Image (spheres, rainbow, N blue to C red):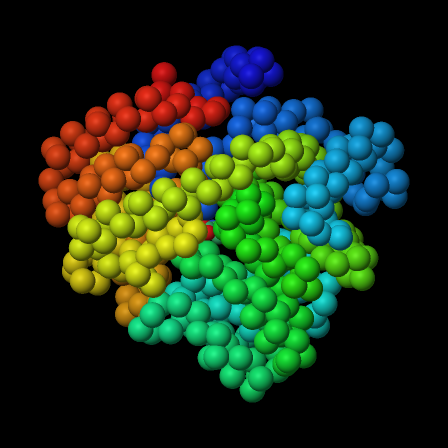
Length: 422
Ligand code: DSN
């Protein structure tokens, strides 16, 4: 952390206000339980690469074909990132330049679609992502989007319904994946449906990339025409994106990212992605991925013990979606009370939600960050107990303060990389 330390003191001297705010954010992350399922703690090595001199360099283009000179080191870094992505996921091709998940998905469309094409993705309140054709997203406006929902009773994807809709609508693209899907996604079944209806199959693995890399969730690589991901969620890298495809689609994907959609790649991010992928290739990452899932199951079981209703009745992965309708407690009210008590979550729509997205019925939580901290099943039970206590006492600020103190103490015994309570 020598470089980060040096940078911090430079920053303190140059801009004490921003330095102080960064330090406060670091303390906040170190002192609270971070249960937002799309967040994690990147390693000190990843943070160091992110904060490096690579941020100074422009590199439009690809290995050996750049529009600027001075690429002898950047070329090597990007190539290492690509090779590690291909090795980790078993993909024939990888592009590590997308700035994040949404640009990655836009590039995916740009590689294969024309404006007005029909696309089919999962409905946002059912767990889909904005860029899978949701009406307020550019993808819902530039394309003719049709959307499948989860089954109302089971809260799970109904593959028969997906098949019926796909055969009727004949979309150009069929998406699987999303942001609030607590169950294993049957990528092979999606691939079969896409084949039968003549669609391209795109798999968005942003949430579960680390689980796939660690062998804790089936992979769509080899089944999907294109796989899109972010790099900062369960994969535990910097904030970035990647696209993976078969060799036959490699050119189309690369051209869609650059020059189709983006300018210069963020080289500091590319280096940090390479570092994170190197970490994910180590055997201990498999243990990490398995523990994310076992922790989520332990947390889910204790929440259900306390009467919380979980969409789909549990979880197979890192994510738990709580439907608070039975508690007459809006998601936002509980999320705010939990934050005061030191538990950071996000309020979220649930399938068939009757409330609005900015004031929905659900709460979304997950275990990637607390698992990185080394917490286990015992801590998950404690967390569920605290969540129950807060839910029963959302107005009781004194109680929330007491819990926040207990959580600060717990977090002090499970330090996270790159952040500190002091
Ligand atoms: N914002 C991400 C998430 O929290 O799941 C999805 O883009």
